[in-house]
Image (cartoon, rainbow over all chains, first blue to last red; front, side, top):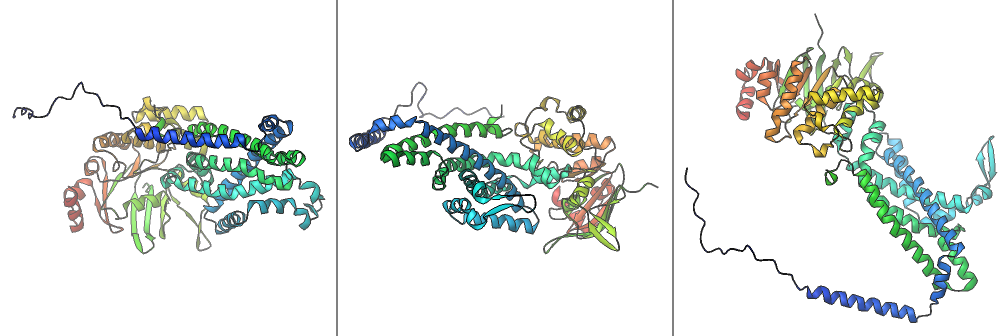
Length: 285
Length: 254
């Protein structure tokens, strides 16, 4: 065996030297510019026709707080309805049965294809089409009494959400490797059990970020229910400014609350993601 | 006279224009270890998948333990079995996949107990004890609570073998079980398979590991273009092939 050759000369020893800090002039400059712009905007608002005392006074008014509670209740219930519908419709869409496939595709087409506000108005005015609703011989009621703003908003928002969620769910299910279905089948599982035990838990990991997106949209979409008299945050803020004419102040109040709620939701989503990331390499010990 | 555990008669299978299996007939006897060799696309994997009904045959019939698979004869016609009945028939076979296909959101132990508890509805503490025994048998007692992503390929494949065994199958199907493994990990999986063969399990193994075939197989079947070209004792087929195509394949592989 040959001895290792001596190292060539001419390459200086760099040990003991440290990497210098860059001055980053451009970062300082751009940061200063942005501070300046923000200050200008703040000054403009401070001198504008806004009575900030109204903002702070109404920020915690009882009607506003009731509004935010109603907004959250509606967002959670409508999203729950949307997720249940979305999962069912996604499973139908991926089923080998052509009838189920068509029904699922038709549902998505109809409810994604029309504006949400129109759907809310249709549900709320259902009594114009069907004065009484019920099951023949068992139960019936006047549609006006049944179709409260709450129910109309829940159906309108939830069923619309289901159409979008079904596509999110379908994407999640398609992202799971076909080998997982086969492995589930090979241990004797039927299609639905394989979906429930093996495919959906893995799909959840993929669908949580887009579902978080959808939920944040939903929180804000509940404001559309103000047109059908559902007493959510925006509706209640409007009612106050109809009385006191402080339009901008109350819109700012509502806006601050929406921002706060969305800010709280983001870390909650990260907790959920962690829960469903079980077994992925990123969290391996 | 015993009857074959698997009887394959005149089976054909097409994928569109491509004929994956062409009039294949074969018997597998209880306790036999059969290795299927051949180039990719020769139909050996498809044959395994047809026995496990992950693929449906287009013509012919496969009997497992005397029971016709996938269809029922009634009034001169064949009627497809329901998903539930096919699921029941699948329990008689255990499948090991090339890419392991462990459930990534479940630990090694949970992968093994999933089938017995969820599909067979057996008591979980009893299943758990059996699963731990299976893990010991494949040499992975220490990894029970690890997730697949934390295991090496060889370890994952050994868990996959244990998962298939947990269903107490009569027949084990191996679809290129070592093809996705780094070379240094092949041996540990083959060792588990050898031990299984010694225990008397009936096995059909699609493999490129000719050394394993020579050492363990009772019979080697060489397939080409969807048909069986040659079969016989491992020493005969691998050592002194009669057919020109077999010779060409073997010289290309070695």
